[in-house]
Length: 87
Ligand code: FES
Image 1: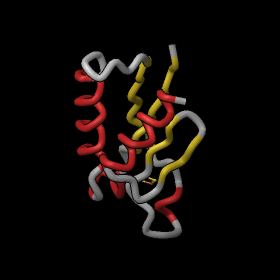
Image 2: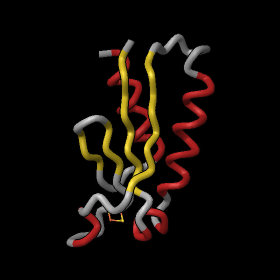
Image 3: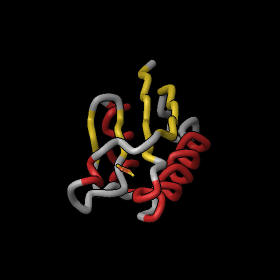
């Protein structure tokens, strides 16, 4: 079974830009993954500022395993998660 560690930045800049909505979207996916027959262990980890927001307008920021996603949206994160599970 695949394991995905999803770090969602909970720093102020990312929260202002919607990181809490991304966490809700991921929680929703966890609830329906059995119906979608997705076999994976998904761990959601709210974390402190990951850094990219300091220099440019890149918030919100999410890291899935080692891949950093800037200007993340729920749709982008969901598609990355599903692609990672199906690999
Ligand atoms: S607050 Fe999220 S990267 Fe800085």
